[in-house]
Amino acid sequence: MVNSLFGRILLLASTCVLLLFIGFWQWFSLNQQHSQRLVQQSLHRELATHMAEINPLLSQGITSNAALKEALHDLMLLGPSFEIYTLDPQGKVIAFDAKEEQIKTHGVDITKVQAFLQGESLPIQGTDPRSDGQQKIFSVSPLHSPDGALSGYLYVIIGGEAFDNWQSLIQAKDLPQRWGVALGGWALFTLILFSLLLRYLTRPLKRLTQALGELEQKPISQPLALPLAPSRSQEMAQLNAQINRLLQEVAQKQRQVTQQQAAKQEFLLHLSHDLKTPLTTLLGYLDTWLISPVDERDDSLLEYASASGQRLQQLLAQMLELAALENGQIKANLRKTPLQALLDEVNQTFAPKAKQAGISLNICRDEGLLLYTDPQLMGRVLNNLLDNALRHTPAGGEINVYAQTLPSGSYLVIQDTGSGMQAQAIATLEQPPSQTQPELYYCQGDALPQLGVGLAIVRQLLARLGCRIEVQSTVDRGSRFMIALSHYQ
Image (cartoon, rainbow, N blue to C red; front, side, top):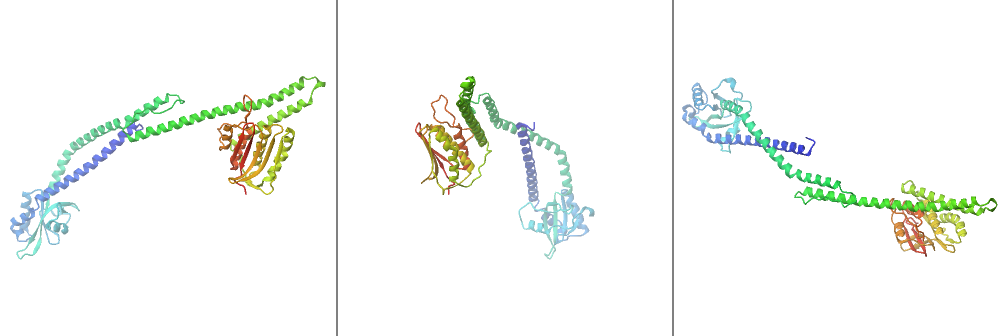
């Protein structure tokens, strides 16, 4: 019960009402006592003065003798709720009608006596001689000797010991009934309050729970939103709006996941085509060589098969490199690097291939240009760009590599006269890399375009190096790749 929302509301409401009830009860009791003291002291304000006037001894300022004690006894018989004392001018108790052991305090706070005589606001509580430190309301009158000198005070406690005993007896008798009525009222009020809270607070939660249950039955592919009417509760309206925003984000993420899955499927489809082509060529050359008579076998078939095998090996190596980049396994180690050292290495690698393919490869020299980069990763970028350029530039074409300084910055340019790129591929290459974006491919006339795995690697490598790339391309007329050297010095 306590673990449920209703149980916690009931417990909280009951505790709050109980605390309020106890506080109100204390306030009411104190206020009632204050009112009783005010009424009694106001009614008996002149009591001590009247007693002093009607008693011959007190009227003459006598504060202590046997006859005075007898007079005090007679006055207390007429008023059993009063206790009468005579005080000296300093507040010391002189005469009283009680046993000596009943007097616990033999001095009265004279400042309270003076406050009463000066007419300050009632109630004023003074010292009760029959208790240790207890304060009670009183009436007091000054006593003067025949020559007019102050001889002491007549001090009357209103509601003395006998009054307290009878009041305690009556309260003890009525206390169970009072507490019974009070607890019954508390229980009834708590039940009513809990019912109201249950009605006006938990009903929107029930509707929300039902709406979420209905939402659970809908397929996630459909637009999801809580079919709740506007609530008078601001909190519930905010909760409803927040849940709907979260549902929209979930739907958006789901669409992104669907697109990512489609992109990965397309990626795998293109990859299978790229891997299948050199593998089929390799097997075709080998089968042709095997079925040929021994004396008629052409060794060039083996060379073609070897080239296809190397292409297949290159594709697999590129796929492993791309996976390592996307998984964050390759980090950049930036340092000052001469650009000419990178260009010399690229020239040694691709000059023979370009000559064999009948393509003019022109790599300009720049001895003074320094880059702040990772030479190994930047070398991979240049290798992949040149490899793609060679594969998609026809014989008689041209590839140029050079550094260029423009108002917007310094660039390393790779320009070819190949088949060009689609606009979608260019936009994707220029965007920051993402593990889930579709990969790039060159324009081809095949039913399935050839996957540009090398360009996907270029995009990931440039992200590690902190460089951007700009592409200008026209289909069937060539491409121009410009690597911004943001760390150029």
